[in-house]
Amino acid sequence: MSIAAAVLETLRAEAANHGGARVARAGLRIGELSGVEPESLRFCLETLVAGSDLDPLAFDFEICPWTRRCRACGAVFHVLEWNPACSACGSSDTEAAGGDQMELTYLELEEP
Amino acid sequence: MRVPLERKVLNENDRIAATLRERFQNHRVFCLNLISSPGSGKTSLLERTLEGFAPERRIAVLTGDIQTDNDARRLAHFGFPVRQITTGGACHLDARMVERALEGWPVEDLEILFLENVGNLVCPTSYDLGEEARAVLLSVTEGEDKPLKYPATFHHADLMVLNKIDLLPYVPFSAEVAKENARRVQPDIEILDVSCTTGEGLDRWRAWLDRHL
Image 1 (tube, rainbow over the protein chains, first blue to last red):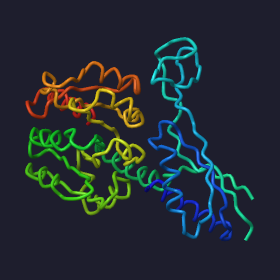
Image 2 (image 1 turned 180 degrees about the vertical axis):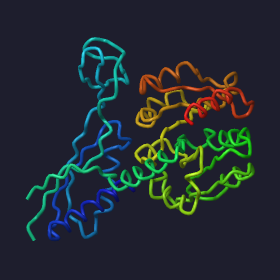
Image 3 (image 1 turned 45 degrees about the vertical axis):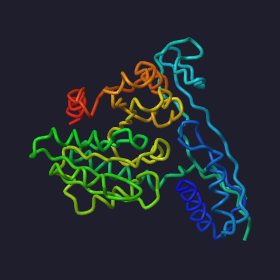
Image 4 (image 1 turned 135 degrees about the horizontal axis):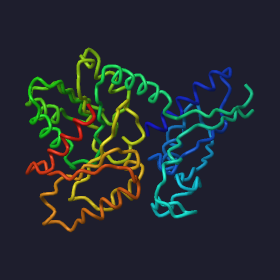
C-alpha cells in the first residue's frame, strides 16, 4: 500500500509539473525480484484511486524477468525454477543482471 | 500526450537512503539491516549480540515494530542506546523513519548501528535504509522453502543467519535443503548457523560483524 501511495504521489507531482494536466494512464515496470506482486499493487492502486482526484486512471504493467549474466560466456538469461546456472553454457559462475525494477515508465496526460 | 518518465517508484526513499549511507560511510559506521519473519529471532540475536560486547563499544540499535516498544525495552537492558520506531501500521521501515529516529543521536561516533526491521519477509525488501549490509534470519521452525517463496528478500541479502539450530533434532527441517535454496536464489550469500538459546555459532556471527568494522 505504501508503494502504491508513492506511485500516486509521483504521478501528482508530475501532473503538477505539466500545468496540472489530468493523468489518464500510467506505465509501471515491475521486476520479478522487486518484492512487489503486480496484482497486489494493482489492487492497492485501484483502491487508492477510486473516488480520489485521480479517478479514473488506468495502469499498464510491464513485468521484467529475473535475469542473471554468465561470467563465462556473457549470456544474459532468464532465471527459471530458481536455477542460477547459465542456461546457455551451464556455468554456475553468474551474477545478478536484473529483475528488481520498480519504475514509473510513462504518463499519458489529457490536455487541460 | 505521452510523457516518458523512467523514474524509480521509491525515488524519494532511495534519495534519503543515499544520504544516510554517505553519512555512515564517512564516519565508518557499519549499518546492518536485519530482516525476517516475525518470531525468527531478530531481537534474541540482538540481545545475545549486545550482551557479548564490552560496555565501551559504541553500538546502537533502532528497532521497528508496528506497535509496542517491547523490543526496545528488552534491548535497553544492555546499556547501549536503543530507540524504538513504532510504524503505526506500516509493515516495514523506510529511510525517512530511520532518518527521523537518528535525529539528535551521535551516529558519527558509532561502530555499529543495527536496524531491526519490522517482522515481515516481503515489504522491507523494497526499502533501502542506507545500510551497508543486509542480513536475513531464517529459523528452523519455519519452512526450508522460504528462500524460494520470498526470493526477492533472500536475493538482496548478504548474509543468512539460520537460527534456532538447537531445535533441529525436534523439527522436520533440513538445514542443507534450506541453505541450498538460499544459494539458488543468491549464490553469493554467506550463511551462519546459530542458536540464540545455547549460544552455538554466535562466535562466528561476532567474527562476521568484526570483519565489517
